[in-house]
Image (tube, rainbow, N blue to C red; front, side):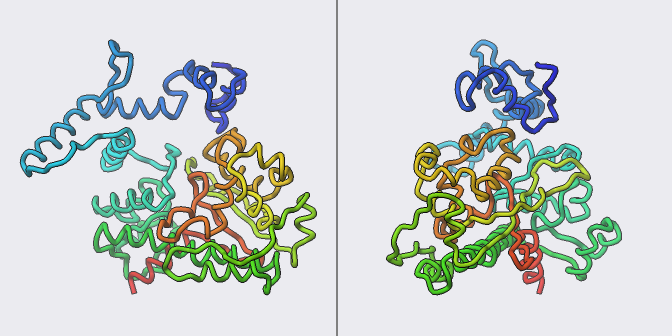
Length: 396
């Protein structure tokens, strides 16, 4: 490995590919990464974990990884259970992500996971949160255990007992203040309901509010597009409908032209969670200003590829909206430009609630991480705060 490269650099893999003169996502890039030691790549470290738990092993004759002893024991146990219960249908397949979750659960229950010291990546989607919340609940773990595992207390629904309060650190004083009589979760199903309610709150009272306020500021309160935004996000529990107002297509020659056309300036801020954070390090990026949300999103929605966008609306690539989302995406995809991470239309869906149905409850993250919104009046829309409110309502 090049001595000038540091394994601690978040862009380490991207720099390896760049120094090899390769383009990301090509065979040449894969060949450059294949020259690294097993423990120098995330997938290599994952393979080491799976190998330690005997979930995979290397078949030298075939030159590939195959299921290890523990994997075969799981398949045998499944076959025996199916025979005993006479269950029909295809046999269960243990795919890589399933095997990984089993490995995580075993390490977690054995007390070997330290989210801070190990800089473990957290799952931010509904079912990622539910995975950990249900595991906590099934194991009988509480916030006191979460402190031991270095897991943030405002990340998933978890129980806390009055007897735990003296053992929580000073920075967790909010737990005693909000839940003086403890938090009790009745079942794993309730864990899922709480995770979904948290996302729904962020979607309805955060993402939708941002969209309506931004469009009203840009077009003016009586403009058909502003009225359509209000109607679409106020559609109730049913699937969101796309705006049907008959309005002419608006295109801008530059960012300055787009901002000049706005009925009123609108500036909000975004910051992103850092999923793999060393103990004591900041969990969030600084806030970043966005001044061109509405015109940038209107353009982004028209394109599935960046080349077409750069030909027809080149200013959008340099917009605050794209620049800030690129910063967020590079937390996970370190060193990669946005063109290699997501198509333009995906960036639009982060903000436009009409792109994603409320029933899915998934598009409240970006590039695998949470984001928080600071409105012009100082309000902050945070999934962490919605979780606290959901738990208070459930305990009432």
